Image 1: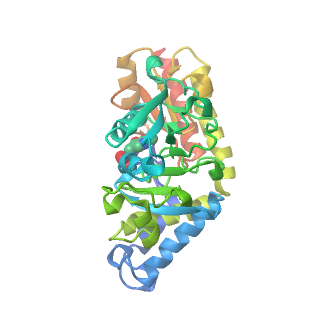
Image 2: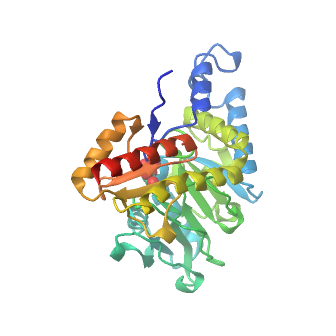
Length: 363
Ligand SMILES: Cc1ncc(COP(=O)(O)O)c(C=O)c1O
C-alpha cells in the first residue's frame, strides 16, 4: 500500500480507517440481508437496532445520565442555531437568551436566535480577533434568561474552552460540533449539547443533539415540527425518514471510540497529538500560533508562516507530501490542522516533521 494520505480537513473530516473499511465491506450486504443499509426502511427492525445501538453507545461513552434524551436532528449544526431558540426561549416570559461570542459560528448562532427573541451578548472575543475565550459566569447572566449559549471549540480560530462555564440554574447550551467526545465531559452540567456529525461523528447534514428532558416540550407555537425536540423525542428521531446512513456510520464511529477506551483514552491521545504540533510552533520563530496559548484548541491547530506566500507554499508542499487540506478557513487565512478523534498520532508526527523541515529550508 502507498504511504497514507493524512486528511487535516476541518469538516467533512476524516473518519476512522477501520470504520471506513467496515462500511465498504458491508455496504452491499447489510446483516446478511442481501441489501444495503441505505436501502432498508428506517422503520425496519434492523435499522431500529442500529439506532438503539447508537443510543446505547452514546449513553455509555458520554456517561450520559438518564434524564437526557438523545436526538438525531436534521440540517447539521446550523439548523440547531434556530432549533435552540425555538425550543428554549419560551422557558421564561422574557424570551431572552445570553450568548458568548467566540467566533464565526457563535455569531451566526446569536444572529439566528435574534429572529425569535431578545439576545444579549454577555462576552465577546471580537476585539481581539477571537484569539481567546472571554469569561462567562452566572453573574453575567440575567435571571430572566432562558438559557446561556457557548461554542465549546471554535473551529476557525482554533480556541477551546478548558472547562465549561458554570451557569448555575440557567441551562447551558453548547455547540460542540468540533469537539464532541474529544475528552471527558460532565454532561449533567449541560442543558443542550449539539454537534454536526461531520467532524467527530460521521457524515455531514445531521446533528447529534443531547437535551435534558425537562427542557423538552416548551417549543414556541410556530416551531416547525421537524425542529421541535418533543417531536424527535416522541418518535425516536423517526418522525420522518431520517438520514439512516449518517446514523449507521455514527454508530460504527461510537463503537470505534468505545474500543479505543472511550473519551478518557481519547483525551489522552488528543492532548499528545496537539502537543506534538504546538511544540513545533513554539520551538521556532518561523511559525506563529494564532490563538493565545491558554485558549488553544486540541482539535484545530491554527498558525501562520512569516508571510502569506509562505503559507501558500506550505499548503502546496504539504499536499505533495500526503498532508491534505491544511488551508486555514477563508475568513482568517493561514494554516489549520484539524486533528479530530480519528486523526492518528502518526499523522500529527508526520506533519510535525514536515513543519520542521519546511521551517529549516525556508526560514
Ligand atoms: C462549531 C461549529 N458550529 C457549527 C458549524 C456548522 O455546521 P453545519 O455546516 O453542519 O451547519 C460548524 C462547521 O464547521 C462548526 O465548526
